[in-house]
Each structure stands twice: as C-alpha cells, then as structure tokens.
Image (cartoon, rainbow, N blue to C red):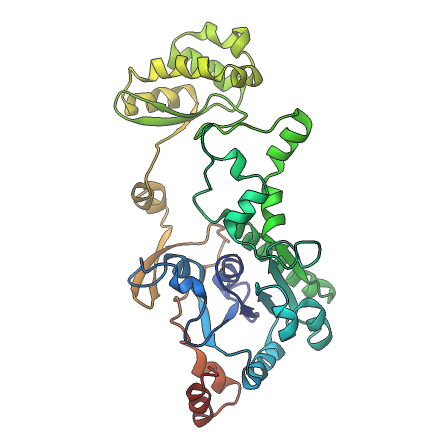
Amino acid sequence: MTPPLHGITVVSLEQAVAAPFATRQLADLGARVIKIERPGSGDFARGYDEAVHGDSSYFVWLNRGKESLTLDLKSAEGRAVLGELLDKADVVVQNLGPGAAGRLGVDAASLAVSHPRVIPCTVSGWGTTGPWAHRKAYDLLVQCETGLLSITGTWDEMAKVGISVADIAAGMYAYSGILTALLRRATSGEVSAVEVSLFEALAEWMGAPANYTRYGGRQPSRVGAQHATIAPYGPYDTADGRILLAVQNDREWRALCAVVLGEPEIASTARFASNSARVAHREELNELISSRLATLDTTAAGKLLDEAGVANASINRISDFLDHPVLAERGRWAEIAAPGGPIQALRPPADLGGVEPVMGDVPALGAHTDDILRELGRTDSTVADLRARAVV
C-alpha cells in the first residue's frame, strides 16, 4: 500500500530534538523530508555523543528516513536553492533561533505571501510573540519554568525528567498540528500556519498538577517514584528485590487488602478508606504494605498482585527494556541503516491497518546534496563549484 503521506514534501530547517521529532514521524508515514543542515557541521545534535557506532544516540533516533542537504543559507546561492525547494514544498518546518526565520523568509507571514500553498510550522521556545519571544529555550529551562522540576524528585531534592520531555511534547504537537493542517488544506483548500512552543506544549502536560494546585491550595509533593496524589502507587521492597504496584480505585484497594495483605478489614479503616485519606496517611500505609511484601520474593509478590487484579511492574533498567518480551514478541524492533552501521529502531507506536511504516535510513551529513541539486537542474560542474566554495 502507498504510504499515507506519499507525495508530500517537507522542507525542514531543523536542529536538536523538537522539530526533528515531528518531521521524523512524517517521514515514517511516507513524506519526503529534506533536512537542511550547515555545511561541515550539520545539525548540532549530530555531536551530542558518539554512542551509536560513532553517531549520536539522539540523531539516529530523530532523523531516519530523511534526506540531508547541506546548504549555506547566508549565501545568495544557498538562499536561491532554498527558494526552489520551497516552490516544491507542501510543508516547511523550522525551529531556528529568534528572528532567523524572518530573515530567511520562512516565517509564517513571509510564506503566506511568497508561497501561499505551503503549510508553515514554527517550533519556538516561548512563542513568537509575547515578552519572552526572543529568549533562548532548552528543555531543562522549560522544565523549570513550568514547575515540572518542583514536583519531580524526592522530598529533599528536585530532579529533571530523564528524557527531553519538553522537546518531545512540542514535537508531538507539531506533528499532529501539521497532519491537521494537511487535512484542512485537502478538504477546504485553506492553509493554516502551525505554531508550537516548548513552554506551552509542556504547560499542557502540567494540567493535572496545575488544577490540583490552583483549586487544592497546595502543589503536589515530591515523593520520588511514588505518585504524588494517589496511594498506594509506587515501588516497594520485596525479599529479593523491588516491585511497583498501582492502586487506581477503591475496588483495587479492597482487593489488595484481602488478597495480598490478608487483612480485608484494613480497607474500611477511616484513615485508609479513600484515596485522599491514604495519601494523607502515606507513611503508615507504606509501612503496612512494605512489611507484607518484605516476606515475599518478587515473583511471589507479582503473582499475588495479579491474583488481586492490582497492576504491577518490574523496575527495569534500560538493558531490561531493550530485551522486553512485549517488544520482542510483538515485533516492534526493526533494523535500519545508519552512517556507522546497522541499528535497531522501534517501529512507530501508532499502527495503521494495512500500512507499513517507511523507516528509512539515517542520513550521513549531506548525503543527498548532490542528488537534490541535480534534481533542481544544477550540473555536476556547478555542484562541484558550490562545494568548493562551501555553499553546500
């Protein structure tokens, strides 16, 4: 079956995480994504580490299936090539620094005049308007400003989220926004500009703690790996390790007391009878559960929790996750090519019936430059001259 986005061309002036995450998902659906990179250095995410056969773990995750075109956009020739690409584009994605998109004519206002059929997508830090429009934004800065850092970690110390959660949130909203804009253009002919900021994307994800704080009068506490507003929900020691259990409602709480603790009467005790009461008496509750689970090995504890219908999980390291039986038995890993050699990559999480994700190769820097320039009518001698002058 033809991929859903076959025939859609995306030109992306992107770097780091947020915009590349959005465009990689478009590439997985069959869009042609032309990634414009700086000659010589490219997307600075290429240099974050060398963990994957000499390539960056971030870059190989975010950039499969794209074509890499090196282009000096400060040169007249480079801007001319960009203009020709825009003539063929359906979508332009950029997360350039403040003001740079306007100087290149790839901001939403400029494209509405020069290329009115093109869908512009802007990924910014704090929004393109407002008092912080010209400030730099990196993931941890956004985690700080949204208050996420203040509710993550232990009582004694804050901790950042272990992945680039603000970038990922923004990339997801950019991706869904672009798909929505493509659908609107296809059904009505109307073109919508898409704008997403890291701050506002992560702000949306802070909805529950924001409501809890605004209307509850205090913000959720930092409680390590436990849930701040639900109990019992967190890790507990067993006789030979640790297990995480999650009680979501009073029915599960009663089952935990009867089957796992062996004391059904505890469920109706006033200090544990509701979730709010259990949160208020969390320390006593944890001691009660810990004393029982400490007598069981992890396997036995898991079996009892399963019998009670209480959700539970192993507390895995990344190496455990890589060998997870769900991923293996569901065939979620696929081999793709990267500059340093073949790698294993996860299939996109949204399965579409009858549609196989494209999952193309990770491009070396400038791997597609010559082909794209020839496609635009440049001769071999012209390409050689542009390369000699570091235009590409």
